[in-house]
Length: 221
Length: 353
Image 1 (tube, one colour):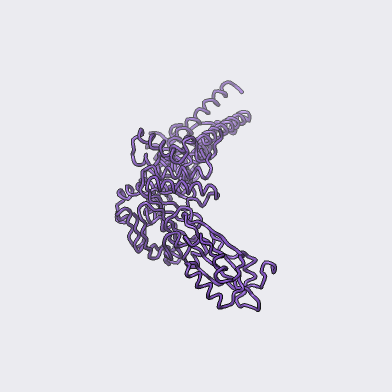
Image 2: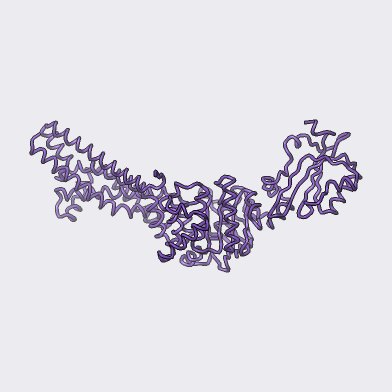
């Protein structure tokens, strides 16, 4: 493999990392509160608010059922509004975030709902406010599941980021398609796949290690 | 301390819209400083009743007074403040797995906005009280059931409550641990003058520490009184079935099979004699056979203690004829003992086995 290709591979890796990291963080920042609200606004729950629960659920389902490549193209006006352009790595972050946030919201919702209802009852019996219950009980208790869910989301984002080549987003997937497939360079394709495998492996191990650390249900001393 | 007046709780089922009456006109007064037990089978409504006291379940009708405060009329803020004076412990402990023992006990204080320095001292004192000082930095996953319930108790006491609600607090524990936890509760009751309300389906728990008890069935209180009175004088079949958990009042299986309702020639009469209070220590059987000249064959018996008062039963067989039986009856009544004819057995029941 020529040095030029190697440097291309390195640049593409950086682009992928940048896109996944920024959209992952933004998706978490937007998705977590939405997930929290979804998990606590249902019937008979802490912040019961049926309207929000229903409308929020429908919007999230709509976003999640749109194929990503169509989402990328469909929200181009919105992307342009936010980043001033519709092409390039930074522009690609917008659809990635839009796809990640509802995904993460559902992950957080599921993790919060899995917290033992007895803990909520105990906190209520202590005179805790709904916000205290969320902050001091639900979030800390759901943290191990949330960390594992975010790991899953990050891995999915690596996959999604391969598609943003369509809007000039760059990244490893784009490199694989343009050089490995269209210019028929199998060694480039192989290199891209290997780097992607290593990247996903790394994200998964890191996520699991953090989840183990914050999970106090199984303690090994 | 706690007064429940005409409490009703109806749950509507989603499918038919029919209301299920979980509580149906409950009147109950629990005095300050006593340990009050509520016993009932699963589904009898005891869990709902306990939760009505701190408004985890809002009653459909009726008044709940805790320390003179009408709980149902409090707004959200005042209710939270009132709940800090009512501690609660649970069957499955409900500890936060993400917090250490120390941090679990500290939680109610943090929620109440207690300054950090005071929290440290208060939690240390509580852990000392429940005997968990050495485990303060452990997580719940590393504790045994009994230790977890001790954390639960320390946590419930953190905000200095006047009332402690115990929701089947020992039902998930083995008998030995159960006794240790009950001793701790009795200890706290004596030391802190705390009013304790506990619900259970286990009569041994009631006998072990309760002063008074109420029996609940199908959402109604069917009987209440001091534990001793309920144990010795209750006639309700439901109460009796609970008491049988503790007292071998029911006859052993093989004796039960030999009993018949109508006497046959040469049969002996089987009597159950119930001792209560001070009569339990009198040498009644020897007095009986000496004064009346009847022979009594002891088939089964048990003496137990309820809060230091002896209570016992004795099942005897005798050849006594009807006139002698009347004499036995009069003698026992005079001596304040209970008598019940259980049936008749063949001349020598033991050999007949």
